Image 1 (cartoon, each protein chain N blue to C red):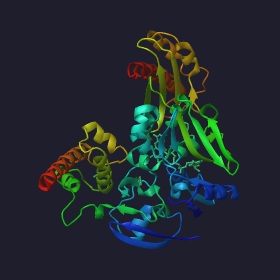
Image 2 (cartoon, each protein chain N blue to C red; image 1 turned 180 degrees about the vertical axis):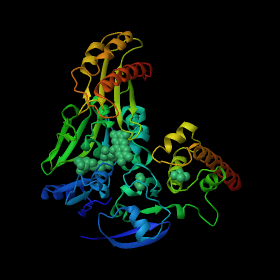
Image 3 (cartoon, each protein chain N blue to C red; image 1 turned 120 degrees about the vertical axis):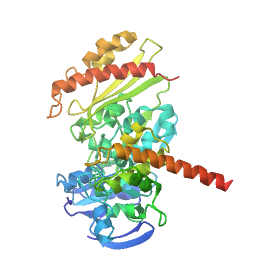
Image 4 (tube, rainbow over the protein chains, first blue to last red; image 1 turned 90 degrees about the vertical axis):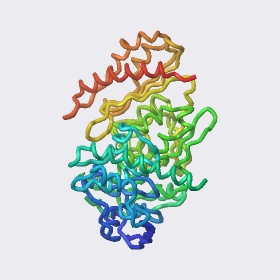
Length: 166
Length: 284
Ligand SMILES: Cc1cc2nc3c(=O)[nH]c(=O)nc-3n(C[C@H](O)[C@H](O)[C@H](O)COP(=O)(O)OP(=O)(O)OC[C@H]3O[C@@H](n4cnc5c(N)ncnc54)[C@H](O)[C@@H]3O)c2cc1C
Ligand code: FES
Ligand code: FES
């Protein structure tokens, strides 16, 4: 028994008739054609498939597409508002927060959730925050540095925006 | 990794969900999906129908009900961990919730789902037992209140009947007590190798009352009654000796990572630490 779903991805609406067992990550990659979201383990452990569901980080291999019906998803392709990179993306680039890049989209979206909750996390809070995301290349230190740098950038920009609004 | 085919319903009201559940023996409830979907992908579970509770509005509240705090079954681990109300008047559940899995798991998993799953290494059961919480189950015959001590009946099994849905969890306020959840995380899975939840009431240096819930050691979480009995009315200096009874008469589970003896040992050490911390963190 197929189901009709309507999922807004990065601001654009996608409608499809899907089997209820279709995982959200397969919807994103195969139905919507957005392959920035990676599949690592498919067993909820590696975090490579992390996307934002209504703004919150989730492992899209452990959400059914039908559960996302009517809701809004942000993938790595939609994180930056314009042509420019998002500050977290910039920070990963500048701090060498990636090597092969396989874990990176998930790391960045998980870091996004963390920084929404806690704008200035400590090193330990960052390590705990990305605890559900595995990286086989970097040894994590440069990822932690990148999240710290992203936090500084985002706080600076927020202060600048607040001053501009005064 | 794709689950076997199933039908899917997403009722908008609790009544519809209850009716659906009663009408189909081969149905399973879906809440956060963070135990059920992994099991379905491994084909350890292949329900013919999933009844998704996620579209039922208003079942994710955390509210003040006077003597107790009431938590809707669909409250996520993240919501419990961050609840100001819980942190102010009954922090133990929040202390356990922030230890569950990772950010992504906490954003999806629900308290009702975790209790129904009754994983032997889950975090909530220790806290629910130590708090003497009540679990409200709803079916076509109405509401039934199940006390924590009779809720967990074995590994992955509970006192829930197949037609019942957990709708609410009621926890007492613990003002005047110190509460602590201490967890030894499994390095790969993140589940508790041992998790100890402690509620301690007493003036500095003396223990008036104490409750200890332990998860991860046995097939089912339990109250460390031998430790509790040895501590009521006793000075804080009695903690170290009493904590040695944390796994008395318990058949400890062992696996490749942690043998039964090791878990027993951890239970004693974590019980001692939890009690000492709870006594010194005691609130007004
Ligand atoms: C990577 C990972 C790490 C994890 N780490 C931990 C950890 O460290 N500690 C921990 O405690 N847990 C951990 N979990 C499990 C997690 O907490 C789950 O969210 C939880 O066990 C189940 O809750 P759920 O809402 O996801 O339930 P589901 O997976 O949707 O359901 C689980 C079971 O409960 C039933 N059910 C669900 N809701 C109800 C209800 N309201 N009434 C009756 N039955 C219901 C379902 O039918 C199903 O049988 C982890 C999970 C993952 C994927
Ligand atoms: S692919 Fe989803 S957690 Fe690994
Ligand atoms: S950069 Fe290769 S897995 Fe993280």
